[in-house]
Length: 389
Image 1 (cartoon, rainbow, N blue to C red):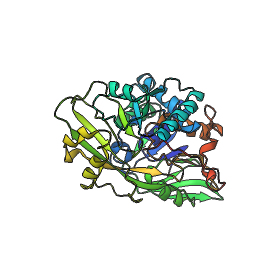
Image 2: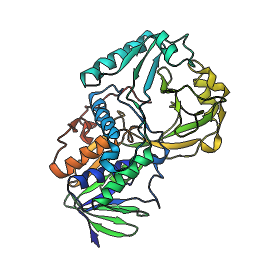
Image 3: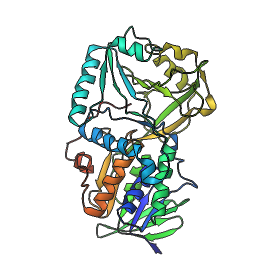
Image 4: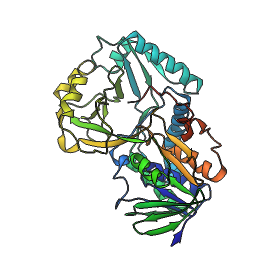
């Protein structure tokens, strides 16, 4: 049996960030367990890479502000590029109630130190994004430091820096069981042998509920398929096109990353999608998504869908659409960093540091993680994030 000071279950962007922050703080005996033959085959590799601070709760805004600053310094921190591109998020309102919601969120965001969110009227929306149909638009909010990153590059940068500082990455290593003695973590059983450890971090994404149950913990994390339509237009997109979100339906689109200037990613959170581990792409999703574009972006009806590049991945949903970060209730030495509900890549710097400090210091000192404790569900103090897509 081999031993480790800390075992991290899950080698995606969250597990990699945890390893990076642990090793940077001086904890070198860290093992990352990834069940696949390579990293990034789970949710990280399917993510679109959007990053934003336009949220509606204090904790999500704070995590975004920290993470966006980190992405701006990512090369300095890890030695690798993350592709941060501050193109902005544009939330478009088609009713006075929706615009009032955006204005109220802006006041909350200002209170958290996010000072560059702008409220646009219909004319400004038309001027800034002339391809949009604005006859039903009453206004919008825009934040220029929101934007895009490369999820796989973030994962690779965190991993490389952690490995340089002593962490070990074990690929093709699936966790079969988590052993406890007297309510404390004692070992992790894998398909490649047993690892003695008193500290385990569950960073298993959509599979976190299954992993936590190995240690006897009931974790309210459910997998939810999210599908992405990849499309091309006949002409180059407007320079600087942001992420555009229709508040009424949740439909959103953005330019794809890369040298080709006429590629788009289209998405829509289908309310009829059931929880499941399905990651196949449904062809019927294409017309359903294009139907959602008609009110705001009817020009998308002319796009050519690249079926081979369309994809589906998994969100890891919690009942209140917020992450679970902190100690697992009832099991000493088990730590949870799960349930990001679509925000894992963008919040990976903050989440990794929060759990690393909790492991090493007993609590997250740079940011209060108490609101994200797993016990909030049993204690009836759930959060209420409404700005999710």
